[in-house]
Amino acid sequence: MPLIESRAPADPLGLFQRWYREAERNGVPQPDAIALATADSRGAPSARMVLFKGIEKERFLFYSNYESRKGRDLASNRRAALVFYWSATGHQVRVSGRVSRLPRAASAAYFHSRPRGAQLSALASRQSRVVASRAVLEKAVAELDRRYPKTVPLPPDWGGYALRPDWIEFWEHRADRLHDRLRYVRKRGGGWRLERLSP
Image (cartoon, rainbow, N blue to C red; front, side):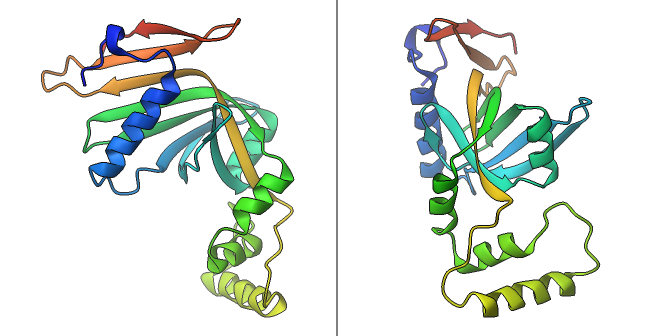
């Protein structure tokens, strides 16, 4: 469907979900892989790939270690941006807004839904910190596996984040490079303003 203002839904999250399902149907490898950009208190930027874990209350969810580079950035500067790119469908979605932590109960529920190996790795790793060798990490995981034969505890420095968009931009590829870009900007009183951007 062409990206035309008259056909665009009033709610950008509906369009996002349609494009996301289209990416899944078209066999995009890992459509939930997103680039997350943050900046520290001095404005120094940093970007990395994380996994998108759904939308809740108009917020984009992801999980991480609170003491990682991204966690430290978000503790001092709550503004962040996400980029989804699905080459098979010719779509990109950019999201920018403010990030908050999810409640501890929500983080625990998601943590315990993960495979046991992922839980042990999260508990063993001090993400983004220098480590002497891979053997050190493997030894830590093995020790935790023995210590917690049944339930792996939620690490105190691990949990969920929710990004509430200030704006969401939809980009659609055109062969002549005259790509389509529509941006939804959140209005103060509620709802969204739709804008067309030059490619």
